[in-house]
Length: 301
Image (cartoon, rainbow, N blue to C red):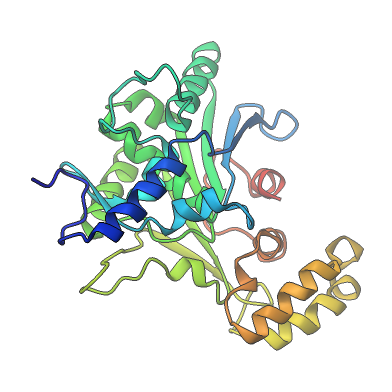
């Protein structure tokens, strides 16, 4: 008998073995997040930033590549790997962490926020992250909603993700739209140029069916305007210091990545550097009233 969360087609022994390998990696304490207050710019704002995929971390890649569905009742289907990175346990999503071994990201950060908000009722918080970190940031309020954490959700000012892959199906997207609307949460997804990660997992109707939801803020290789090629990005890596200032100078590692981007379009566009430059040079869309654009630029850059 298949349990909720299993993929909905007959699995061969090799597929089962691969899933066990993925799960064994995801039982480790791998997810990294940074929680801080920016006292100089907005003393009432807490920032929770999730780290993205480390390039040479096989554990992170196992998380990304586990594209099987996990079904959340009355919510929709979600990327199982991302859920496990956030804290999905073998018995699902108990409201409180009952494990004595693992310090799961969701429960640890939720408690940290509870403690900070209890000490200061004026505080609010935002969630952010790049790549895998963006996927986890976008999933965090979903689990808060499932657990009925309305007080925390009312304190959540916005979710801002950079280079975020797709995380769920259309039903999940509709559920999240209602959550965001109910609690007045701003959700902004930032995409730079040809970033291929923002286009996966695929949204075809036959095999996958993953869908983005919410608004998308798009920046091209001039951080505004029309789409340009990987060749231009390589040239720009040499001239941007003269164009925008020495602080934008790119090192040879990044220039090497640009060469890869010429051969495989979209690879180099996923690196955090261009997302940082996009927020600094391209501006941010639709800033909320309680957080100034200057605050956001300071926090994200």
